[in-house]
Image 1 (cartoon, rainbow, N blue to C red):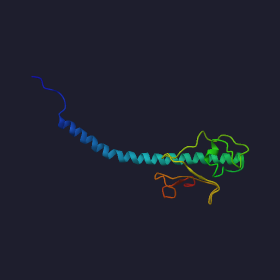
Image 2: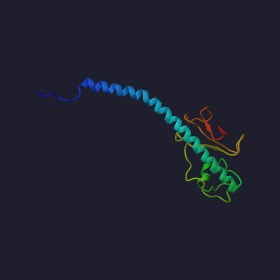
Image 3: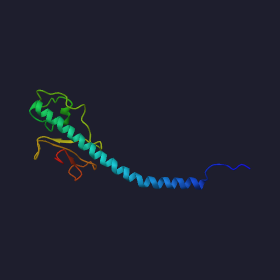
Image 4: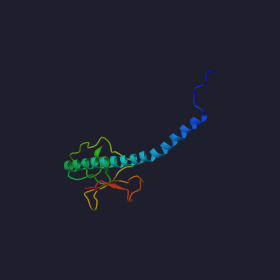
Length: 136
């Protein structure tokens, strides 16, 4: 007599429960790493934009105005003060790790300019904001 080889419903349910428990343990750990990676990516982007802004100032004698914004690093501004030695400083203006626009203000109070991300919550002025001047 031949025996049917295969899995019983009970065995399949046990495997599904074990996989669900593993997923419940691993997903939060992976999620934490994703958030860390987004923060690190945002900090790197801030540094690159800062370098581009500094090159813009060297070439043109001033930083782009708040009105001209970070777009001035990609396309020559046509609002005053128009840069005299403009060149393209970035391929495109990046977004932060959460897909939000960076905040740029010139002139700023405590630094030559303000450049920051609104952070994970996407709200300006909260404690998770990430400034280019942090860790300086």
